[in-house]
Every structure is written in C-alpha cells, then in structure tokens.
Length: 454
Image (cartoon, rainbow, N blue to C red; front, side, top):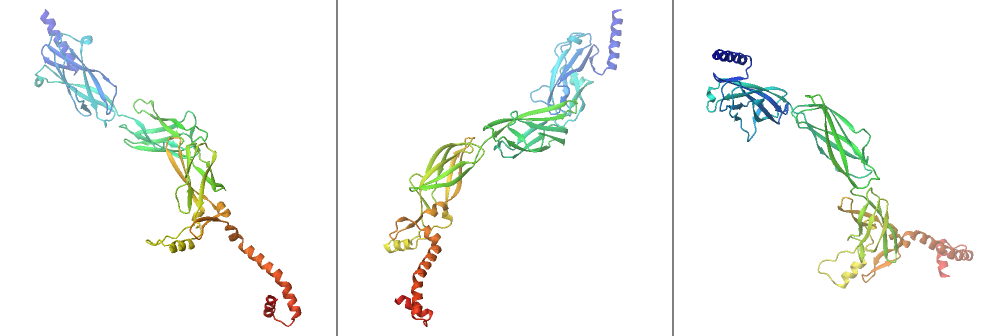
C-alpha cells in the first residue's frame, strides 16, 4: 500500500514538472527546482550591478548532500570580478521547500548599452562533479532598464564684477544609455545678488542624445551694492523618466565669486614748492586694499626722493592725493664714445632740446590688492600740460639743470612784438611829421633817414 502511494506521489510530481520547466531531475528520487526570488534593483539599470537571489527547493523524498548551481552568463550580463558563479546549496532534506528553501546570491553587471526589456539568464543544477549529467537548464527572466541620466558638468564663469553684464554658460551632458527628451534647466541665487538679464531663468532642451552635451547661455549681472564674496548658485535640471514616467530632478550647487579687480583715474592736481601732487580716484566697482602709487623711471622725468607713496585702502568712489618731487628734463644728445672733453659737454648743453610732445605726459602706476587677494598693477598716463604752462626745465651753459620762466614768452611773443611796433610808431611819428613839414619835397626813404639823423 505504501509503495502504491509513493508511486502516485512520484507521478504527481512528474506531472507538475512537465507543467513547470523550473524543475531539474537529478535522479529518480531527486526533484530540484530553481527560481528567481527577486533582483536588486528591480529593474536593473544598464551599466550597473544587479544582485540576483536564486531560490532552490528539493521536492524529492530523499535527502541530499547538496547541489551545485551554476549561472551561465550571456549578453547583456557580465561577470563582476571576485564573484563566484558556481555555488553549492549545502545539504537538503527530503521535501525541503517554501520557507526552508535555499537562497543563493549572485552579482552580475549589465552592459552599459543594454536597452529596456526582459533578458533570459540560464541556471544549471547538478550534483557536485556531475555537471555533464545535468540535462535541463533553468531559465530566469531578469528585467533591465536603460539608464537615463543627465548631469551639469561645467560652468564657464566663476567670477563676476558688480554692475558688469557677463555671459554665463552651463553645459549639460547626457551620461545615460538612452536619449533624453523635454529637459528644462534653471538656476537661482537665494540672495538675488546675481540675476539673469533680459530673460527668465528657465530654458528648455527638446532632445539630448546618448553621450551628447549642450550648452545654455545667460547674460547675468551682480548687484553693484553686493559685498565681495562667494555666492551659491543652485542649478536644477528636470526630465521625465521613460521607465517610471516620473519627473526626475537633478540638483547641483556651484559657487560664483562677486568682486575682483577695480579701476582708477589719475590726474595732475597741483605743483607747489617743487612738489607735484596727483589725485587718485577708485572709479571701479570694487574696493581696493593696500593701495600704493609709484612713478616709474621714464624718459623726460626725474623723481627726487621716494618714487612710491602708500595711501592705504580706497573704497568705490573714494579718492586721495599722492605727492612727489618731480622735475622735467630736456633731452640731451648722447656723446660719442671716448669723448669726454669740456668742449663736448658744452656742445651737448648747447644742443639740448626742449621736451617733446610725449614728455608732456608722465606714467603713474597704481598697485593694489583686489577683493580676491591678488596683487594688481594699473598704469595710467597723466597729462602734465598744466605744469608746463607754469614752468619749464632747461640747462644752463655749464650743463646744470635750471628752471626758467619761458612759456610766457613763447605763448605771448606775437602780442609783445605788436606792442613794440606800436611803441616805436608812437615815438617816431611826431619826428616824421616834423621832418616832412620842414622838407615837403623829401620822399619816404629820405624822410626816414632824416628822422634817425635828428
């Protein structure tokens, strides 16, 4: 009777095995099944690693020392270094199923170019050392989703000068394994110190292919009243996930520095007691720290004493005065090599020329530290015509430098000549008239000679 019941049970199990290909027959008394319990993640993403949990059950009546379960990898699945793809279940009891099933874990990598779909993964079950006698492979179905992913990889501008409109370009890259459609990109600054100019902060991208990148550009400006420093920019990229249908949002932060360099204006202020003063004004958009003014060596000008003046910090719109002892010199001809006689020196002094037009300007350097801590130098050319109208510098006969009041005569020489002519005419005309009265027949030339004889 027991034999009859046993045989019936065997036939029932065989019928079930025919209906379900998950069973493998090791021997007449062993019936082993394998199935995919789950996968993490589900679905698996192309290019990522998936953990497969394979459930093994013994529906046979006899106990076993265990079975080898071998994973047969095929596209799009690849081996993960260090993983074992043949694992033993350990000992089984008869009818060890359901909650007593054996769980084996395998890790596989999905090819990065795999597309969406379900892929078959074959499993072979056999007694250790008897793989050749295993006649049935189990097929597990693994779901794979192509990877959609985009990232903001580059901002081309990291510094803004307050009040100065500057283009900013954001580069977006599709690093996934499927195209992206209908993307939207926006950026913002919590303090509204940095804002886009002439357009909104959101731009749309219709399509971005696999491995492609695109650039969106804005014109931005920083508030002129902003304090120098680093400001956070929040960048938001959104697109629809083709697998889940959900809206995917990528958020990144970046820093943009507001501040940097500035600019100056330098003008001749006054000359008094041999000293020349320059007014220096910060006309840029940023404060300047540790400002110093320097008059470098240059043709036509000589600085007596210190050539640098430290004036401290200058905020935007501030100005100060820097004073130097400056003399303007005439250009001296270069003496021939080897000739050092007194005659050569005198000849050189005699042939000294007046300052050229270029020497009417003097170069002034402003050195300062900007808000980013960098040391900068700005060079300006300052007109010195006001100084030249009051004094000129020349050379005496012995070659020493002197200061002469020359520009007055140069500027008003024609007026002076006119006055001299008028004065001569006033003195000479009465004599001329008297001579003509006494000598009515005398001509003009004779009359002039007669005037000087009187």
